[in-house]
Image (cartoon, rainbow, N blue to C red; front, side, top):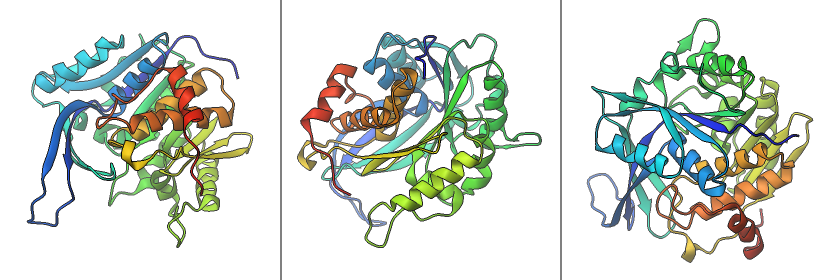
Amino acid sequence: MKTMKKGITFAGTVLVDVVKSIDFYPKLGMLCNIKSVSQAVGGCVPNTAIDLATIDPSIPISAIGKVGKDEYGEYVVKKMQEKGIDTRGILFSETEPTAFTDVMNLCDSGERTFFHCKGTNQNFAPEEIDLAPIDCDLLHAGYILLLDKFDAPDPEYGTGMARFLHDVQQKGIKTSVDVTSSSGVDYKKIIGPALKYCDYIIFNEIECCGIWGIEPYGADGKPDIPAIREAMEKTMAAGVREKVIVHCKKAGFLLDKSGAFTYLTSLDIPRSEIRGSVGAGDAFCAGSLYGIYNGYGDEEILSFAIAAASANLFSENSVDGMLPKAELDLLNQKYPREAL
C-alpha cells in the first residue's frame, strides 16, 4: 500500500470534556467526592485530529464540525489551531451551545461514565458541509450514533452518513468512520447503511458485535476472539472496502479485505501509572490512521495504535497523554503485552 500525501480531514462531533475524577460511583441519591476537575477538548474531531497532529505535525490535518458562539466553542477551536489544524471547516451557531460532556473518571481504575449535552452536534447536518474545497487522501467521520442528522434516514442511501460518505468517495477520497457506544438503539439500522461507503471502520468490540447481535465476551469475561472475528467478517461482507479494525481494553483486531485476520494484545500498563482512559478509543483511532496513512502492515498498524491508546492512559483528559511517533515506538519496548 502506498503512503498518502495530501493529509487527513476529520468531520463530525466537536465538544468540550469537563473531566471530574471521583473516588467511587455512587448509588442514586448518594454522594461521592470529586478529587479534581479539568477541561479539555472532546469528540471525534478534536480528539483524533489533535492526537494525530501530536504524533506527526507534518501531516496536513483539517477539521469539519459545528460549535456555538460561546466560551466552549472558542476554546475547542483555539486548541485545534494551536496544533496547526485547519479549522476553516468549523461552523458557528448563533442559537445553540457547543456540545459538552461531564466525564466522571474513577480515580482507582480510570473507568469513566459520560453525561452528555449534544448541543450543536444535534443539528449539524451533512448538507452544511461544502465538499468542494476538501482535498485530502482520507476523511475520517464520527461518531455514528451521536450525530442526529447524519443518523437520520435517507431514502436513497439509508442514512445521512451513508450519503455523505458516498459523496466523499466520489471525490476520490478514502473514507473512515468511528462509532460511539449507545444503549437502546438499533446498531444495525443506523450503522449498517454506512458500511458499504467505508474504506475503513475503526470502532470497539461492543459496537462491532452490536451490529450483528453477537456477544463479544465469553462466560469467563475474556474477549471471545472467534466471536469478534465473526462480527468483523460480517462487517466486511456488508461493504467495507479495505480494513475493519476493532479495539477493546485487552487487544486490537484487524481484518483486511484479503481475509487476513490479525490481533495483538494491549500493553500491560501498571494501574498505578493510569490516570484516565477518556479518549483512549480516539487515540487508538489516531494511531490506526497514522499507520494506514503511511502504508504500515496490519500487525504494525495494531502495534502503533495500541501504543497510541496506551499513551492516552497517562493523562486524565482525552489528548494530553499523546506522544510523538518516536516516543510511541519506545512504549512498545518499555511495557510487556497482556495475556488473553
